[in-house]
Length: 125
Length: 109
Image (cartoon, rainbow over all chains, first blue to last red; front, side):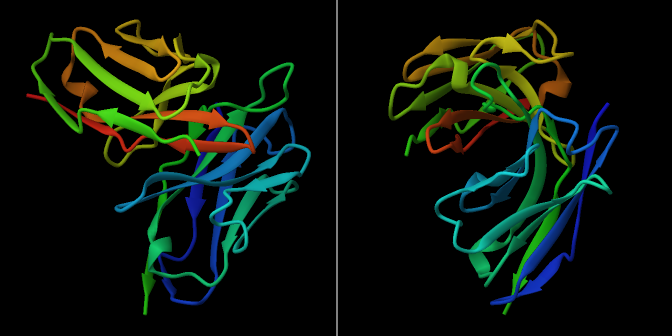
């Protein structure tokens, strides 16, 4: 059974870079066919999809965050990562990593079937 | 961008009762692209329903999803104390884009 575990610094200074890791256990990020996403929940915004990386390594991001976000993967250690540049107070949230199964024949994913418990990020001035 | 509005914001019911949670979208959405999640405090969110009405693995048949176009419903029969949680609907849209409703908090008295 696949499990996801987020980790990273709980506190980030405004204008700096937020870096989070999602460890995948019980499976592999490149075993396919899945998409691996980050979703965040902030008091003012509810749940917000941040972006994904696919089993092929392709990425896509929420247009509202695209200029500041990078998602990458370390297949050898079955982890994937989130970086958010130039953080501000609106980036304070609980960040979740998720898995999205591919639907045939579109090869897209429409929902997220595995979630981590989340990691809280606070932004300080 | 499609906006999902859930109602009510909070629902308080007793064990054994039925809960009906609504998710309305600003544009027509195929039920194929509609999912529901349960989020208990301190736990990982859990997929309940995908494809509008298909229960995820291990989800009891007390949970059911229905609806079409702009109006979707999650029904929970025979409520149990463990059903206390926040419930979210989510849709897939072109671009691609994934958007969520603001959530309904279900309290079991």
